[in-house]
Image (cartoon, rainbow, N blue to C red; front, top):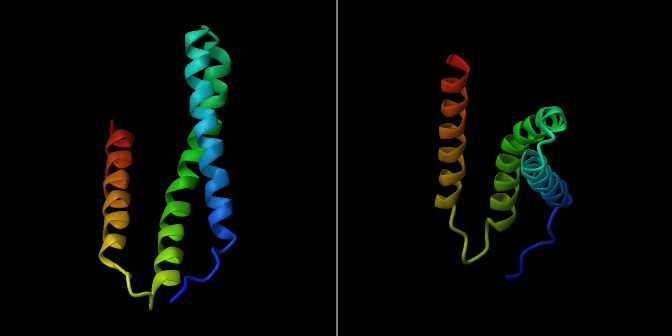
Length: 99
């Protein structure tokens, strides 16, 4: 049985992830070149993109699992790992916010 084509949502998820990688890399370069002001300014954009990645990742995992249902190699137990990571990330964010 062949998997159906990937939904366009995966392309959105991938684009946001690449934007995040670029922003984090630029952040590192800005600190190394002592451009702290721009680093702090871009930090907000990085935080916003980071916050968007959590629900995008969960939705991508759900869409992928739904797409694979019915395939002989379907392994739904791996979806639990996505939710476990999300739960730990949420607790970590709340603990930092409580400081």
